[in-house]
Length: 360
Image (cartoon, rainbow, N blue to C red; front, side, top):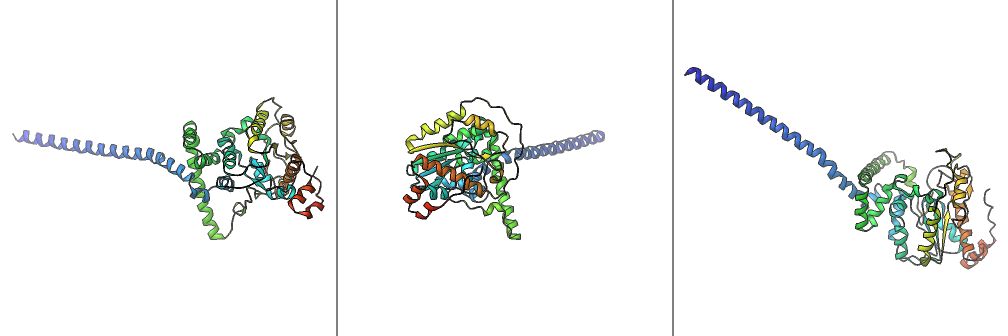
């Protein structure tokens, strides 16, 4: 009997130990499952949270670049009467100064150009919104870099697509936004990282400024009527990025130019589709000249590299040259001379001004 009792006690002890072991294993498993679920759920919850941050007014003023802020401001314009309206990519944002065009033509001028990223994602949404809310212009100028006339450079993978996604989320219709997310899930996840990263960068930059009173150059940029000059020095030479490509016959540049002319003819007295000047040392200059000859209203103008602060954006001096070219084109399109424009505008002193010749 004593032996049986001892055996039962040992068996009970073993059962208790096994139950405790099983219970500990179950608890460990549940903790691991909760941890795994947390690891999975946190990013899933963070993604929509940061996407929401990216489309917010807070991010627009505490993270978004001056490019994005300038693009977004166009959607607040109401009741403007701009006789010359400038649209296009960032070559127009940094190249066409509306104040200079207005002086040289006598026409009130507005610049509503956007970045290539916004064009790639939203197409002409910005232009369409402006025209629906403001007066019909006398002249609409669409200036694009020669790269923007290439089909491949209008694709998301060739642009900083997050800027365009932000604009579509803030100002597009819900159906377009849903389609964007469903058709570009990888980019949607990356946009969440863009919003989180630039918000954090803004916070660190602000803390650094508070400690040192040193403001970065980008924060000293002033946007004037949609125009600004990037705060980088003039280039001294062209950077070689790839071997010059052979001319490829494509209908895309001509079709793109004709779409602008036909789609916006009823929205403007005259529609001019221009190609922006590029550095004379650009490897693709001859190819672009051949591709765009007879496609745009102007000719592709090569300029000295010193008028650029990168391959496609202009210094203040470069923008003066580009603005003058545009002014002359507007005056020609409206049938007036430079002097007549000044007299009509009431700026009689400008009629006697001798403008320096364009650089060769």
